[in-house]
Length: 432
Image (cartoon, rainbow, N blue to C red; front, side, top):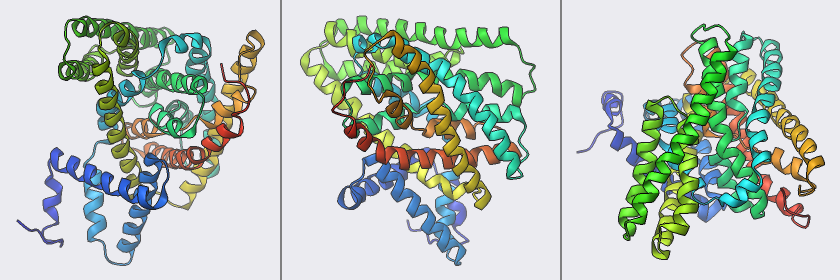
């Protein structure tokens, strides 16, 4: 059955099913990945995002010239995607598990203090610095954004995105030590940041009064409760894996662990990201040693690497296409550009202080650790998803738009140059 692309039949595109939208996204992702491989030869995720950005801008220009049917259809497809729900309650768990299952737990534990401090104190420090800068920048450009919403912006933009970070590190040529430290921090700080975001969200959006005891209880429940729940779920699946020697069944069990575990954690008001990370570390380490054959390990690694690549491709495609449904004028771009610099400066301070202190207690730090941790702290889809979860209002519009600009600049500028920085410091000792 053929539908003409005209105004009369345009309404058909408003009722597309989830399967149809998913099919379109996967098809377009595959085409853009092919184009990137044959022409741009950028890291796959960045290449797909760049091509989708160019594609979006071309459609917008055609729309302004009077050829708006293609832009309206594309915008309608994007507007039907509940990005924050699709990422935070869908793709995120699978992407975090795919990253965690390849992390060496022993190496991670050797850097537990560095990772723990950066993922908690570092995020809080960055949040307040960004919030202060955002308040003055927004006022300067004439955007009326209360300070509590600036804090909300600081909480969602401060954590590094494990999806963006780990995808880039794979092609950056970083040492295993550096990779584990940066990846470990990014795997945990998003879970911590989401808890902080929820606490500030309650005050900014729901008008809740500040209550330190409530925030502390929320943090313990979400973060520590999520970690314990993830360990428990991982242990349960580990016992099942020990009693099976069939890689199809074992891979299916890991899928159930992610999907069921994340859903159950969210239902119990625990941090699903932290739960999934802990479960992934358990399966990826204890599971490999005690419950899997070499055949299962090979198939498991291949399967989760493919899941990681496919979901990353779709995620970065959506990030690039989101430009069609955002209100981005010159003032917003300039505010976003300044905030990108301030976010990076806040990252430098929030990383530099703890690393400088820890360096006095340990001699194992890379001489250029602060530079690499700062530049390797990419922002990604999680920040955009959290911004989009804010209810409609004038504050939401500017926060979403500026967040988008910061994320795009972070992925393009830092993502395309982190490899050069890593290689330039490769001759020095590995990071702690």
